[in-house]
Length: 335
Ligand SMILES: [Zn+2]
Image (cartoon, rainbow, N blue to C red):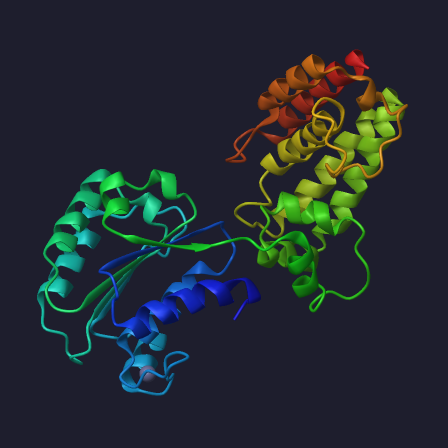
């Protein structure tokens, strides 16, 4: 088990062992922390025919079938990352919940990415929650709890999975990384503070391309004629990312985030006078052009960045190149 899951697992164990298991639990936390496996493990304990004080047995029929995906008393919904959860899927839940469990232990419904539930589906789910038949547990996972209906929230216990701080994440990541990665902190930020995704990022050689991009941007700050090197570094980064295609990190939007973090860091240091703010560009000397910008200009450049925002990767790469160039020129004109 990932070390950052130990605490929420303890909370779940205590709840389970107290015998006061609610009908619905929302497992909430950032993307990439292992919430799906965690939810399945929670379900294993709930359905286990021979639970131990520290967890499910892993050997009984129930445990084996749940691991296989063949458990007749369990339903797992919403595995596709962006698929909406249909009202049909929710009807299936109604069917399962109204039957007597085959194994007599209880019935389990896991809904991944519960934020993708339509309002109609959520309302159908509420109906089931209001009239549970027998021992039923719903486990909903989400990385965006604010998109869940308040009525679903109010009928559920929330189990939070917190992202580990960078030092703990780093210790875990270095168990799987050889060598020293000076920019690991920035990879971690770009990967949404997910140790698992950061590790994938490193394993797919993305760090090398990001380092080159950071270097070229740093050089551009001293010499605005080097803008084309930044564009080339972006192209190289995106080409590598395309061969890997990770939902969150390979999209061109990461370019937006990188520049945004740069400006955000400078703003925190200069305007908010936060000496502890880390700097994605490393130690910034007082004569760095970014440090000469006033707060208003930094905010304007951050707003201008919206033009290169491309969360769906829908902007053709030539167009993205032009927009980035335009933004770099606007930045250079402000120095
Ligand atoms: Zn078991």
